Amino acid sequence: MQFLVEISGVKARTSAIRFPLATISKSGALKNYFYKYQFIFSILTVLMIFYQTNYKNDLKNNLNNGIVKNLAIINKNCHNYKISSSIKVNYNSKDYYIKIGTKECENININDRIELVYSKKYDEFELPKHINRKNNLILYLLLIFTLLPLKKLSTLMNK
Image (cartoon, rainbow, N blue to C red; front, side, top):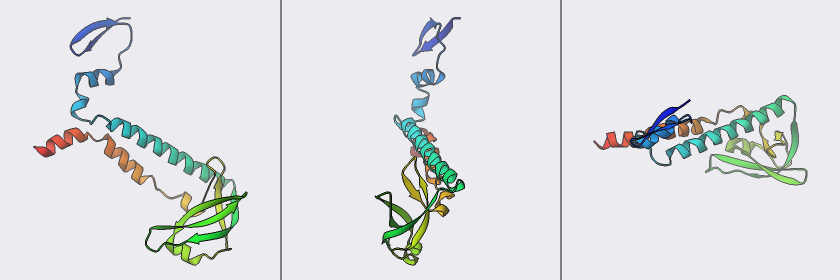
């Protein structure tokens, strides 16, 4: 089966199936709407969303399967001027830092025991109440921003 392909005004016959985005970008239609590296940022954002979703699903599975560790707090770093503070726990001769809220940090004492969900796949701990948080919102907003035709919008705004 033969296909007629046109790239930059040159027509040729080929047996290969043409890739629509390649012909669109060669004709310059996409160049009027998007910046050069905008699709690369979109792909990186999608990869970050997949990683974050996979990480949260792993922790949810561990929580549902009862893989919860009750560990003693070794140290705490409460920061009143920051959004989050951290606590330090030891598991299998390795120190782990877990982010917690500043108000929570003030109520916790050193040597108190706390329940944490462990992800063997990522070698990290997380508080059970933080697992069900919807914190992908920033990544989704970034994805929407990178998929907008920014170049076209900027030319419209300059007129």
